[in-house]
Length: 399
Ligand SMILES: Cc1cc2nc3c(=O)[nH]c(=O)nc-3n(C[C@H](O)[C@H](O)[C@H](O)COP(=O)(O)OP(=O)(O)OC[C@H]3O[C@@H](n4cnc5c(N)ncnc54)[C@H](O)[C@@H]3O)c2cc1C
Image 1 (cartoon, rainbow, N blue to C red):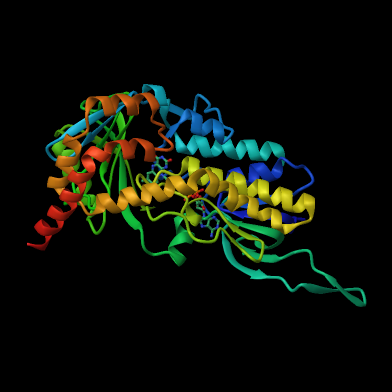
Image 2: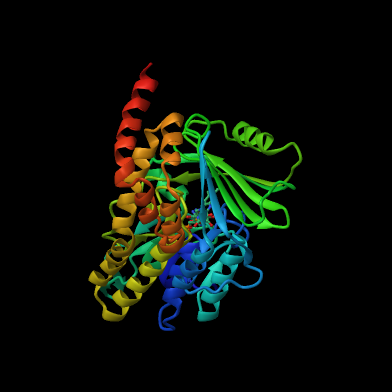
């Protein structure tokens, strides 16, 4: 007979949900079930897979040979008429296979006792009555949620929403941009250089990217406000050279507006990862920040159960904000400035980035916490040119 009662149900079997489940399953006395709507963990993959090795270590992951794809040596950042290059060797940035990463975490969680099911969606959720009949009298119901799933109803004390943007979109419609990413084979792909292309007309509010995977392969994508993704990627690829061939296309939204206000509601319902807006407002990268959200939520649930005190659930938002709160605020500010710049102003800003600044960024910059390198680029010397650029951009747009 299928089990129907768990201490915790996690909805969404991707990086944040699986890390929450792994942390919970590390206590053998606590039962946890993961519901994944898709037929396979990690599939369909909708990620560039760019992450630092130190970030993966923080998530408790050493990438296996199947997960690892490529080392990144540098990043080249282009505007229409200017560019600069950041040496990334010291930052240990890698491109990983997201399918394999998710499977690796799923295996970690399974080994500890987490029950993972695929093709099993959450269809509904309701709060259970506080008191239930037991023989002739009413007793306290320890199960808080009745979760309607593809395979029937399951009951749990704590529920974790790790459904990604499909959950966030229901309550937070702003800050979502369309994106597309193709897997491309082409002779012109630089094997160890990430390339970012800024163009306020072609990719408003975002950029085009190339993430090299080695062997002349790369993930090439674009995102931007109100753009036609298919024609944007096509013209980007045409601009790079006529010879290329595409082996995969994905279209998925990205989110850039920062964390939602409350990660927990008062019904032992915790929201983690992209569902909680835990992706970087600049790049929409979320493997680390969303993954840590899942980890902290899992640990907080363990403490609440062990100590029989739900106030321990607050450890989750407190820990996440202590690491990412200030960083994300600075990234939101950088995004706000950037969104108001037109191409001329972006050209001017990029042309002010000096060699000593780039050397400092290469030396001290952290891939996962890039507000510091961004502040160096938007430095005091260039502040006046940014303000000037903002004003001039507004004037040019008003014409
Ligand atoms: C094009 C693109 C490129 C990206 N590139 C990078 C990158 O290079 N580096 C980086 O760090 N980040 C990148 N990201 C962001 C990164 O992919 C996300 O931040 C990360 O996957 C978030 O993980 P998550 O577990 O919170 O949510 P998701 O990965 O979105 O997973 C949500 C899961 O929930 C499941 N689900 C949804 N509804 C239900 C339901 N009702 N029942 C059961 N299951 C359900 C889904 O099937 C899915 O498996 C990229 C994102 C996109 C779109």
